[in-house]
Length: 232
Image (cartoon, rainbow, N blue to C red; front, side, top):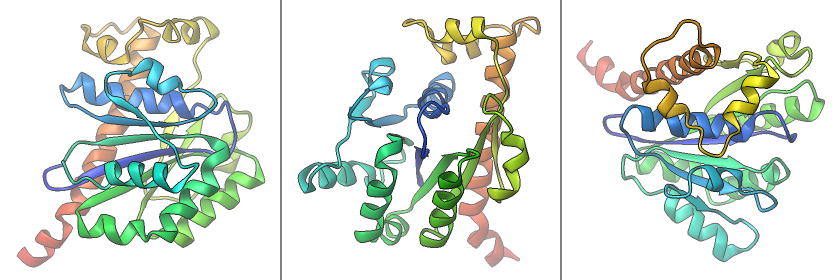
């Protein structure tokens, strides 16, 4: 991102849908490309992202005004460093209500920050309503649904989450899931290894990293659109 600072808010309305895994993958995507990303772990019951990325992740709190302002001050910093927010599912409504109350979208535009919500899609009705709320209340945000094939029947609900861009998790075997949960496992290190077409986890990671790259290109095109229109 040449001029803007992206903020990736990884959000869901239900637990155990792959939210923190997505935040980990995104952080390792930047690391694999020799770029720094700052993480914000807003999960008061389990700071899983901090445990995985302790040197680059802050613990965030929205339980009181002081914690909210400290978090916003860091998020709104236009330093060209990508930011990744791992938001607890039970704080979804409170977090986005806070952003609405402080006119975060307007401030983000003023400081050349691009808020991107990576929304973990689900078959639950609450998920659809939460997605619709984000579309209506934050039209300036880039809203990206994420479909996890491990969730039963999720592909039959794609039409409930319309968007120009979407991400998809393919299902992994239990053995490979256990591998990536090892304390010293790194997706960035895996992505840097020589290509091995027989390594399922390597190929799975590369496919997701390619989707992240395509998302970045879309954000870059959106950023350059005004300049391109002037040239035309």
